[in-house]
Image 1 (cartoon, rainbow over the protein chains, first blue to last red):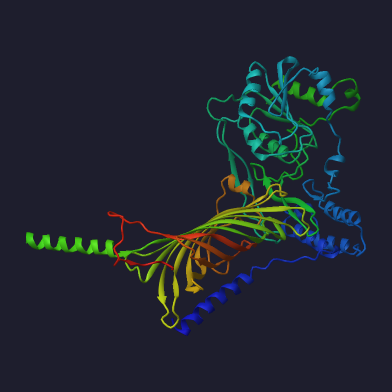
Image 2 (image 1 turned 30 degrees about the vertical axis):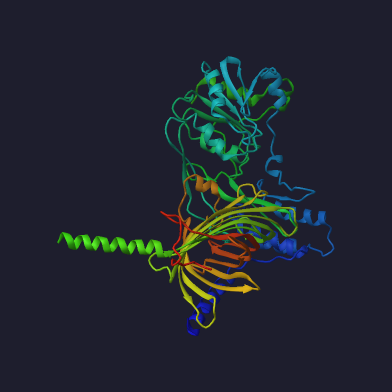
Length: 343
Length: 281
């Protein structure tokens, strides 16, 4: 073991340390300025819809940074940050603290709600319906099956779907009501869609950021859905998917897949969008931030961030006057669509 | 011809007997508990640096190699580690579970000018799997870790006595040089991987994107048949790929037991003239 040999070993270790030192992680100050810069940067590097929404994020920084003050209270600073995030006009963007969570609500609040659950339960279901696997279901007038699925966060069991579809075996069609369904698990989308397809289908495509630049995106990756396994109940008769503006995120994705299936009509209002799968991060003061990061496109490669339109001729709103009399004009339209058989 | 063949067989058998009876290679094994601090960072999960507790269970096995027991030793080691760290605001917890395995061979040199000192140098291959988990994240709560690497390993062992107590002091560093490791793309969700997009997940490792240095300092107090092992571990792992920087630094105190185990065949006794070649002591 010569000194030269030892020197070589030391040189190797030194080079290794030098290499690891290149793995820099940005440090943020704990003050107002540091937290603001961290929030702006996290969004700048991960948010995926700057171009689609026409947001100049640098200009937003300048405008909001000018409003910072060293003596801001936590709530005051939080509200300023929340306003900055609202510039993105995205329902998937939130800032979360121990005392408040910010939401951008105009994506649905600027539109008619088009849904009254009490109305349906009282006048259509007469409070007599079954529930299983997060779904409420019953047979409506004229022998039309009705499924109400309020959230894709509710796990959908294969046995539950068998039970529901078997009960509808003699029905002329089925209505899947996902008005006010704000999304949830994407895997539940595939579970439900698989009952309405008889062969493998292209469901859509997804891409992700490959770097911090605003246009650093991967090539869209196509993904496919398979039909439910042999032995499971499948549905080949007409289907109406009932939507409103509050049909969002995973529910929006469900509509984007169902719209291209034969025997399926989308009835109601344009969905709320939310096609960017959210990514989470945080800033030094411990507040969490969530934002759209991975755009999902439909089977034709079209974006659905701004929503999915109803099928041609199937746009319909809830008439608020008739609703007072116990009439859901959208649900009635859906029933008539099935009875008319215009698929 | 038949006689010649018989003579060769007899000679070979005699040599084998000689090797078995007169040269023993005990297994040096150690079981350790490691407790210390962890510093975790992973920009896939968060831009913040987390600090907290580190707990690990370690196993190590060393033995002189059969083909040249005086000069070569093999080492097998494994470590199961759990780290729990908090963000600077202390309102979020990151968990880290790691399983590290390594196998290596080292050449050893006895330094004649310093009695009891041996230096070792060689290579090792490492398999590391694990995951970081940050519960507060919705769609990106996990950053999975997997790496297979080959690298260099160096060790210094110094056997001495404190009063009448034999002590074996050892410092070892393992430095992976190259291999392959897993990483998702910059903003790629595991949901996309679940959908089948497996492109670009494996990366060739070099010091520019994967730097790991495992340091271990131990002192085996040879109390009897079983030794008390005390020590200190400092592991550094830093990766940078796809604009994702991940870092794990662990400092732990090590306590455990070690000892030498010898497998004796046939008679169950060792000849007084037998040569015992220890891997470390």
